[in-house]
Image (cartoon, rainbow, N blue to C red; front, side, top):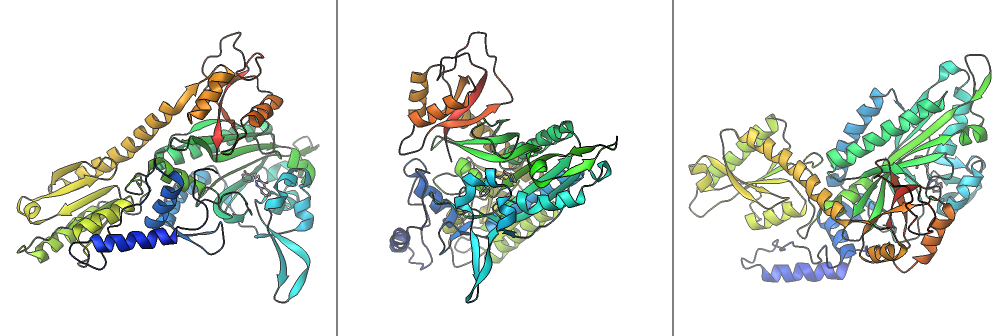
Length: 518
Ligand code: 87F
């Protein structure tokens, strides 16, 4: 991935920054590090991203390349998403399970045709202690081959169907290109759903139900606009029948990013793993299968879309702290009284179900705390000083817009709830406007090449031929990666008779999004 920071945090940079900040600190407080980011989102996106996730305390870099420590600030977001998604799939009668991390070579190879392209990414355990294992054991890169032998065993008759399982787990894919926290890491967390049905219709219906949950996860929780659509034959999961996805876009880099996928596997795996059942007529039939997943990549997309030059900007719905209360002590003021007011405020908010905390540390100045919590992306800051106390109000500052308002203590909960709702809405609207401003309709090859150079999200009429997509890929191959199809949106603009494919000049079959991607 071009334009994104690779492996190592710029340690030297960081040390220099801290030293400079300490030197600048007029009050000479040792801990005053000035905090700000050294890179801007527009200036050097890759370095900016790396700084945002580390300074925001989401990620710590680890000594093994491509592996990252997910800190509590990250896991709290993951928890909120899981607390939305898991009950939704349970309503669909999907059950939780857990299969082992390891796969034998034998079983992994069963999926040979489909695993072929992925083989270089499979990690193996070859030794225990000093002795070599008799046969190496693979670490799951995904769990089709782990699970489906047991689907074959468990499914006998039509009464065993549907079989609908989901597991929350880690997987390992030994990527070699440009590791990036959340977006491309060698180990990541995800949920993987694997379902089997008696009919294709049931499978088709579920594919879209799950995709809609993924859309809601992005749009309602992460405030990131996505496009629902179908992958091309070249970009779909080769083991399946068809792949649907939600696609996000990062305006700063001009790259699309596959947000989550929901596949209809058809009967390919049923054939390979002999997942058969006796139908109602007593005849032998093969199951229809789906698989679907979203991963910790979702969090990286959210950071890239919303973050700014002050750091993270978290949507209220997923932020582990929605309101940070900071006391502003003035000389001669009654500090105790201010601190009490802060604690009272936090209690009032927490009692109303708002995730609020106070930062009452005395060895940091209010200014330092403001930048600290801005860096961590907390949606709303409440400041309380002597003047606020006197007039029975607090000062509220929004992370998304930076706007400040005084709100009366009476009715605080309603005001804060209103502001949090508005921040959530506004973040989505702003992200959508920025995304939409990048969409470029192109009808000819020349327009396409120009738009690609301008980092656009391209919507073009296409003949839907695999050879043509391969040609486009080959012709746009460059240092920063080739253009490919992202998806054909389910919501198709009108395609008038006689519209031609932008690339081949043949009759166009559908509108498709194209671009570089992560
Ligand atoms: C890497 C190594 C080995 C992707 C891999 O999308 C195998 C694979 O099968 C592999 N990378 N895939 C495709 C995964 C398909 C599918 N699996 C279940 C999903 C959703 C969850």
